[in-house]
Amino acid sequence: MHVRDWVRTLSPLPLPKGRHEWQSVCAEAQAPLVASLFLKADLKDQRFLIVTPNYERALAWEAKLVLLGVPERVIKHLPSGQGGLFDDAPPELNALSDRARALSALASGEPSIVIASPVSALEQTMTPQEFRSATVALRIEDEVDIVDLMRRLVALGYESEEPVRRPGMFSRRGGILDIFPSGGDFPVRSEFFGDFVESMRTFDSESQRSIVDVKRLTLAPVRPVMPRLGLADADRVSCMSEEQAKHLEPEAAEHLRDAVAGDLAALATNAYFDRLELYLPYLNGGGACAFDYVGEGYVFLDEPIELQIQAERGREDLNHALENRHRRGETLSQTADDFLAPDDRIGTSANVLSLSALNAMPDWMKADERTEINITSLAPYRGRPESLAQSVINWGGSGLKIVVATDQPTRARHALGSIDLNIVADEVPDEPKPNTVYLISGNLAGGFVWTDEKAVLLTDAELFGVGRLRLPQRRFREGAPIATVLDLKPGDYVVHIQFGIGMYRGLVTREVEG
Image (cartoon, rainbow, N blue to C red):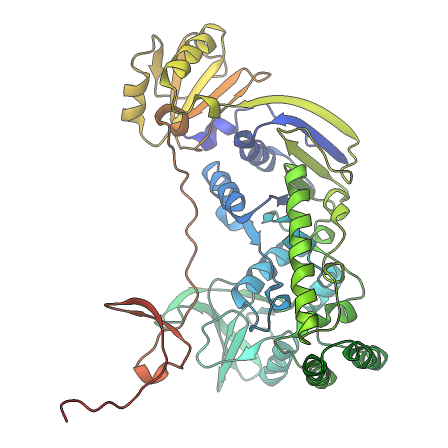
């Protein structure tokens, strides 16, 4: 038996409508509870948005959900897409692609679990209605003018690149159109016969080998906003830059005027450019964020008080960066509130379920009902085998169902050998035998005691003191292959076979031996 099968045997807790707090839920039990709800619930709207304090916790959530039987394809991450607010670096295409994938899943209403930090979930973007109307769908046998399709791609923020290697890029060779969809794992090669889509298939951008045929291709917007600025707003931005420049040092003032003038020139042609997100307050009237995409789905909050701390810290960091950039004349005077929805949006969706062991709530979490779940962590037993052994004996004598989920069954049997209990590697029955430990596969790297369910879950972390969770492996998409040294540009990072990571500075001519 696997831990994913065991979690389905737990008594289902009802998934309530409205805003609720589940108190006394330790961190180790949160993923099993949510996985059980997702797998067993007969929901009309099966969209889950899990808000967790940081990226490490997000990875742990994903690893546990997959281990517990949630299909990997339904789990998406929602990273931050606002790197361009901190400096004038080019857009982070991979982060924007992951955001597009997550928002597409939520906007389409398909069953999905999206994992986000509080800041990434609060980042302002186009409304769900705008996102859906902007998204382009391409199907086999569709009649499409390839030139018109390329124009639509440019309007969505896609750029021409030969060959296609990164999300948000496309290239054309005759009747063949290669598109790397924003939110996709691989580029797609579409072959046209006249104005009809004859075939579509994903392919490997390095080897150019086909992977699998596809019947439908969804093309989501690359950036969070479209570069459409009205004349009145353009005049307002121009006047603001002139007024604000008066209060800056001469060099910074000149820099601000030049930067804004260049940006307005790009916006006048509806062109995408690196600094586009800096004008989001003037391009995005709705102020939507990820919570608006959930609809009648569910928002799960992993320790709301920690989410509040992280949201405040993220807002403070962004304010500091924007203030410094304005002082240098790089941007207009703006604050984090221009780019992030208010913190109380975290707890004001239609259906919110707070999961907390701390039982402390921010002011914005106004629950309709509070429920004591009584699930406690077994973390205090890690590295204390004597205490754990005595507790296991007590649990067995009290009629609790003791389940050991492990990746090392032989070692687990040896560790439990000193305990006077039966060890059974079999299905876990509904009515457990007294003084029996049930051994199953799958290590969640942290166990718990659920008093009301009369269940104990032990993992490798409790048995051996250390139980590493197998985190998901991300497909590497950064960098680009080179054929010769002539493909390198000064400033590129390289890995030298002898000296490790370095920065390529260029080629020089040296005289050797006269």
